[in-house]
Each structure stands twice: as C-alpha cells, then as structure tokens.
Image 1 (cartoon, rainbow, N blue to C red):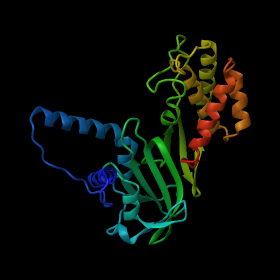
Image 2: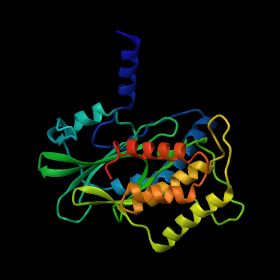
Image 3: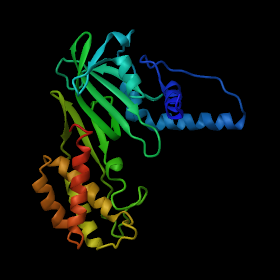
Image 4: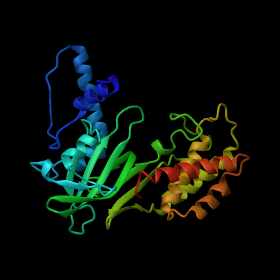
Length: 285
C-alpha cells in the first residue's frame, strides 16, 4: 500500500468520531505533564464554549445516523454517517437539529474544525425535507461562532484577509486612539439562506472613523510585499462595510477609493476584490 494512502487511513482512523457526539474521556498518567495537558484542554473548552458548545448542547440527535440522508450542494445524496467520514470530521465536530429562523421547519447544523495553523470552523446547514432526508442550504468556512440564543453566526474575516499584504499577527497601531478593530459581521439564517444582520449606527460610524484613521496614517511602504498591518485593516473595514451595505461592488469600490488614496490603489483594490469573490465560493452569504 502506498505510504500516502496509509497515512491518510491512519489519520482518518485517529480523528473519525461517531455521529452521536458522545463525550469521551480517557485516563492518563504522567504527573505534571498530565496536569498541564488537562489545564490546556480545560482552557480550550472555556475559549470555545460560547462559539459552538452552548449552541449544540442538548440539541436532538438520531439513534442511527446511517438511516438519515443528506442532499449535498452538488445534488449527491449520502447518509449522515457517510458525510462525517467523507469530510474527515474531527474530535470537535458536532451536529444538532434546530429551527434556526422560527418558521416551523427544522434545520440540521453540522460543525467541524479543520485543525492546523489558523484552522477554520466549518458549518453546513441543511433543511429538513422529510423525516429521513435533509437538503443543503448554506455553508460557512472561516473563524465563526454561533449564538445559542439568537442562532446568529458571527463571521470573522481573519482567515480570509489575515495575510492581506502583511503577516497574520500584524496589527495597525493608531497613535490617535480613534481606530477600533472591526473584523466581523453578523449573519442570520432566514428563509433557507444566510444573510447579514446590518450593524447599528454606532458601529457604522466607527467603521468610517476607522477608514479615516487609516487614511490619515499615511502611506506605508512594503518590504517583501508586506507592511505592518495597515493595508490589512483597510481590507477588513472595507469587507465589513461591503456586507453591511448590500454587497454592492460599485458602492464598495467607491468607498475604497475614497479612503485608500495611495499610489498602489489598483493593486490593492484588485487583490481585495479577488479575495472576497473567491471566498464567496465557500461561503453562501
């Protein structure tokens, strides 16, 4: 058997979980190292509790996931159990049934985390067709949380634009203190699709204030195609504005050019437009 295939099989066997999402614990020994590992796990659980654990806690599940089928975006039909296998669902994966928009129709929400550096949260929403089948409705991939009370998704542009002409960890340093980091939008499931929840007047005002602060900061030269996070914050704030104003590209480009009045505007705008357009292929909102 080829080594690549063997490694894949080992990976699947290690990470594959059953669709019942049963909590599993294992005994471990090792003194301080075991305690450190335990503390790390607890910290991670607290960090992500409000992102997905609270939402999935107590949601209905099936006794036999192989008896329920999914109609995928491609039109293909697979069982839920097969979907978990095909998508390499990891230990943090979850699923549950809930009426997300209060229309009386149950949705199935499946969560997975891809793992690795700058790992991505992956949510797929299916709508109930009948007792044995759910049809694809929406998909999100990135840095995402879902609220257990409102059923709203908080989508961060960190994964999408995190390397926008800068390092992932780089951040804009505003000496005027007018700038406030804005990298997220709120989404709701409504009538079979995900749509942005418009931000309030205070957030919109801050969005424009950020763009003004970035413009007043002045041009930053790049070294090896990177700056200190200045262009990235332009992209983040433009993305937030774009999705809160109907995703109208003409209006977004006008705004972008109004505040990014620097020599490399064509290059920066083209990259921004390309990244958001490409991301729409994985994110249905």
